[in-house]
Amino acid sequence: MSRKLVEWLDGAKGLLRSGCRVLLVDDEEYARVAVQLALQKLDVKVTAVSTGLEALELLGKEVPDVIILDLKMPFMNGPELLKNIRRILPSIPVVVLTGYPRGALVEEVLKYPPVTIVSKTPQAECVWQ
Image 1 (cartoon, one colour):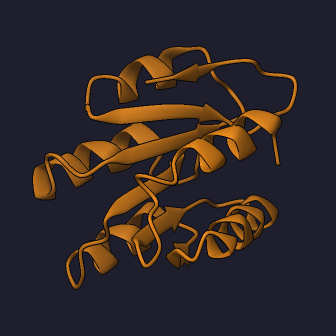
Image 2 (cartoon, helix red, strand yellow):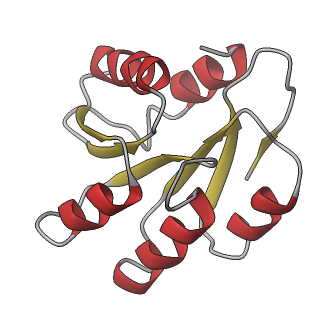
């Protein structure tokens, strides 16, 4: 897990308070498990899924306090998922994790605030809000 992600998780304790419900969406199992374990150490209740479709299904049943999603995923990427989320939950806090902190996909997610972008990779230095 990147230093920036660990720093963000540590600094997000106000947002990710104890008992907070988080929906985590990431197609990469190792990343999903690492973030889930880090969140659970903060006493956050995490529901983790691997696709945007699974996330949208869950959002039809229960509303989390925060959504954390990957930028690049197959079938439905982060911007497409976020666009759909905003139709249902226009103001829910969303954190977008990415190994690609620059480019068209990042620009696309910034069209759907409120959103925070956090780098997954240790070599990337970018954290946007």
